[in-house]
Length: 228
Length: 361
Image (cartoon, rainbow over all chains, first blue to last red; front, side, top):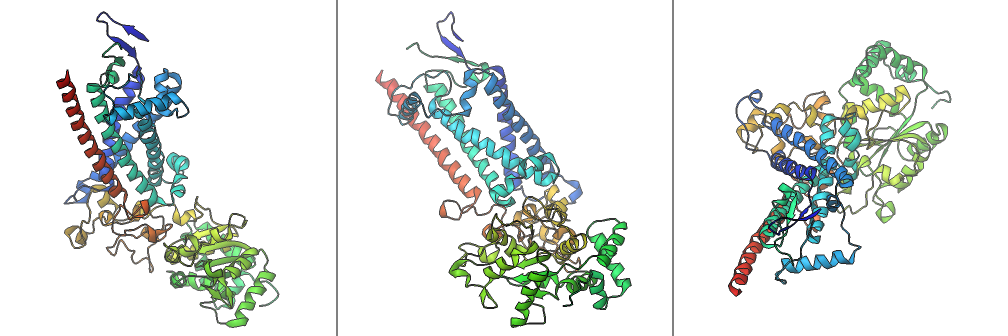
């Protein structure tokens, strides 16, 4: 869908409603998961008084598990939408390294970020560098977190529970329970690094690139700032 | 050894155990294995009618802590009975015979009970230097183990050494100590039951062996080959300090108020949440205590490679990444620091470039 309105600004409909909705729900889930997850591994200062007066770790863990269900179901829904949405909905899940044009675009974008080019190329969807980061850090990172996360969750729910039956095999793959905990902790940092880069780059692109960025994830439309 | 095969009951009576004691033992065993009272009769019946299954207890590279634990089983009756079932055959630590006489027993059992004896292994075979780091009766333990494993009905891997490798297999593992299942390899077709722990709990050991001898089948095992009845839950799941964990009440330092009040030891590195064992339910020394009850965190001794998953005093343990000692938090915080600083620097550079561009126009 390409369109030119009365002001002559070019725009393309990129992110359909389910993708936008998922993006913001996912953002909230990641914030809750990251903060609660940090405090599960490294708990807050000790509470005083009777144990029966408090349920702090219990509440933190409950929030973590609830947000994890939202995150995982959202991720599954996002994969579903990759099949049934528009072609931009698929960009997250693969990196077309077999295409010369992709490499050309990647080198172009790299030069733009190293200040070797004065003007970036225009992109309807993700630029090649963004696609690379999305796939290796966010998509693979999320899969790591979902698999290790439900494996750890299954340790608590015990043998016979759905989490233990479906994901219990993950634990011996990593070695033992403590290894899975360490990798899950590392996953927290992988996602955190991704979030820092993602937010910085999205805002920078919104200001300095030739197309809209932040508002596109709200309205779904990508506006181009020039007609070259 | 007489040519006629005795039943368990006959062996016990020969050991001077009264019928009354025998029946008590059956009730205790039924309770210990989690069965109803009706099973006591079944156990008694099985022991009276079934021919005794010999148990051979081999010792490889180990510290004998498994044997030490085993002979301290909380129910002395159970201990006596189980010992009378197994010690007569072969256990080089506690048997009376020695030298060639002792080694001859192995040969006899292997022949007479072909495919019908249980091979209990304490410790593991070291493979470097052609196995010379552990010699039993003049030949490498690895040879003895392979030889006896050929005709066994099942193997019990006693303790973390036989199950995972334990301290002698910790990095850099100079003797190449190898756990039993890895040594025998995927081609070995008999069941291998892992009973990890350094050492395993006495009642767990006698429970596993009694179950196998009584019911003539191996207990149900989990994904990693451990009996589900003792290893399906973590220390944390049944820890009496768990309410303090849920409340967020932790020991922060070893001599603080929380330590005196018996708060959760999670923040001082307790491995209870990642350790599958029965310590928090069965406990040790006739149910007297277990490490957490004594005020020290669990060190995870029944888990694979626990010596290399340090520190014992932090939940955030060494990942052995990039050839240096670093935990997930070390790696992650460094990465976040670098990326954060890079983003700030890049933003500043972008602003300068944008200003220059504006100036040029």
